[in-house]
Length: 73
Image (cartoon, rainbow, N blue to C red):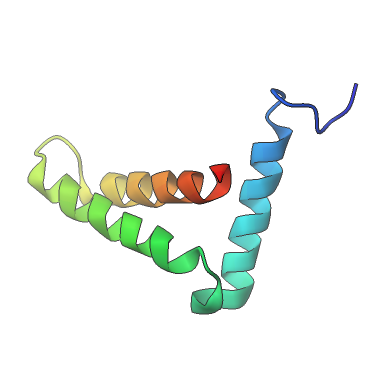
C-alpha cells in the first residue's frame, strides 16, 4: 500500500508540515505567512465579539482555517 495514496491523510500532514516549515524559515517572505496571520487576526477579533469563545481560541481557529485553505489548493 502506497503511503501517498489518497484518503490516508498523509498528504495533508506532509503538506502542512512543509508549509509551516517554510513559513518558519522564510518568515514574511513566504507566500502563506500573510494570509495565515490575517486569518489569525480575524479569528481573534471575531472571538472578541462572541462571548463564549476567548481570543486565543479564535486566533488559533482563524490561523488554522487559513493554513488549511492554503494547503488544500
